[in-house]
Amino acid sequence: MEYLNSVANIKHGLIVSCQFDSDDPFNKPEYIALFAQSAQLGGAAGVRIEGKENIKAVKSSLKLPLIGLTQSSYPDGSVLITPDIKHVEDILEAGADIVTLDVTERVRPNGMTGFEFLKRIRVNHPATLLMADVSNFEEGVQASELGADLVSTTLSGYTPATAEKAAQGVDFDLVGRLSSSLVVPVIAEGRFLHPSEVAHALDLGAYAVVVGAAITRPTVITQMFVHAIQSRGLNEEEKN
Image (tube, rainbow, N blue to C red; front, side, top):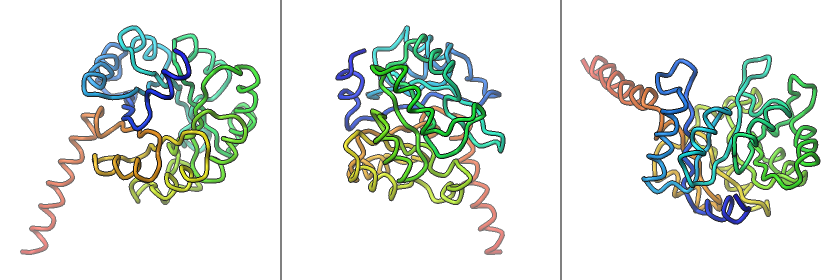
């Protein structure tokens, strides 16, 4: 897919992340493809898909820009997006239009920081559209300077240095700062639960917004409602 189709077509749009935990009953390529098709029917501008086989399944049945990644972890258990060069090759072979990389200051198991890895991939794949998942402002700026075509706030709250933000909802401050500072498109992602939050991120200058669990994770959605009911019960007990 050409650059204009992959990037311009997601402008001011909703990108739906169709990704599941390994033990989720929906974690099968055919089901993920159905979720992606539902997102397309609902008006999504693009999808974010994890894993080679899942990307293949979605690509064969969808005409939206597809953002691809693989997910692993650092030794401390925190999430690692697209760990090594082989994973980049797998994502491209599967047909992704944009490849997502973890571009944080952390050192990967392969010995490279996110910045070093981005530079390596940029040299090896000069024409590939690369999205940098970052956790803070400085990483976003450096990723842009090193050649990332898009910068996403995905990892804010999911690194040891930013873990305190996980309970604070969407990192609107990071979305706004990056959007007002970078020339490349800034994608807002992370803990979006309500349509009003998506609208606010776009008002802050986000190029597009990624929503995952609130749309495509029935287990998580159910847990949210159950938690509300349980919290109500605790409040009633306190009153009595």
